[in-house]
Length: 453
Image 1 (cartoon, rainbow, N blue to C red):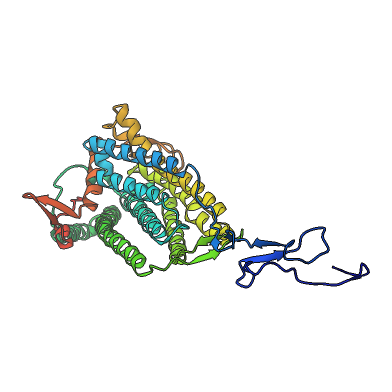
Image 2: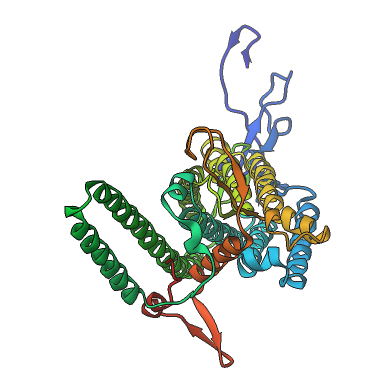
């Protein structure tokens, strides 16, 4: 302002008393180009986050993603169609041998995840709670089933060094159920007899001793590998049970947490100055994202170990590819966006939605496409379509299978079917008997191990 058109002086603009300056929802602004401080001329303007004649109404940020419902609903319908397709074709070999229930559970996990994207966690508490529960229960279900597939491949599948140690005739059909303790005693007894025979011949022929000792060592090595294989089967069975209870516990915990943290709708100013809902589950969502990130990292490391295994399902390789993508643009992207742009609600929503939709759509495609493709082509009964069963044979030049020449041959159908039995056996937690569902106890499992002799 000017004093007598000579001196400058400062004065706060004045507005009508109705202007809510005192409560911080409005400011009084001097009219441009006028050197008179008058309430009739000055403007009462609402600050960011408030609207209305008297700036009495909160201005909420628009954080909804346009067309999200259309994209999400289309993906959900596609997943449901594939689930129905698998149900109709559940007797097909490619579905039955890879595990019909596991196939459906992964699709169910994807379905839960995509349903969660319909709910906007910046809208109100119950939208946030449903988003939180459905999202993480879906992701955990995908993770559990993927881990079971990968762990089964790790424990039952073979690398070529193991194959060199084992005589694979023991995988061919025979008596498939024996008592483990009797088998162990019989093996020890047989080895003792061999040692007695070899020791008695020691006095007569020194060259025979070397051959005999070599034979005993070979039998001992093979016996250890067989024992290790049987332990792996029991480990997998225990893993199925433990992960089942873990999943149930986590889902119950998610629901319980959501019920006990109900709030009275707390709103905060975001970057633009407008208001948005602040969900009390946000920090738990971040904890869940970080936990999922670590868990997926573990699964990536496990996938690397079995990358060149044989006697594993091809879907394990596809799960391996999807796991690497999952690690890159799954929970990691959610963590980065939370740290970088969480205060920009609309951008945060767009960033996470786009990357998450792409990530889980890739997982869905990689897991489902081969089954759909081979069923449509009517090649679902060809084990080569969905099971890696090639084995190395000895190189005639170097007299070894580890020379790098990679002389692959197709495994016998009998051996492949035997491995299918191993996979089914390791996942057999419940059984149907006389019209009832019965739990198979671990001590009974020991008595029905596959005969590896």
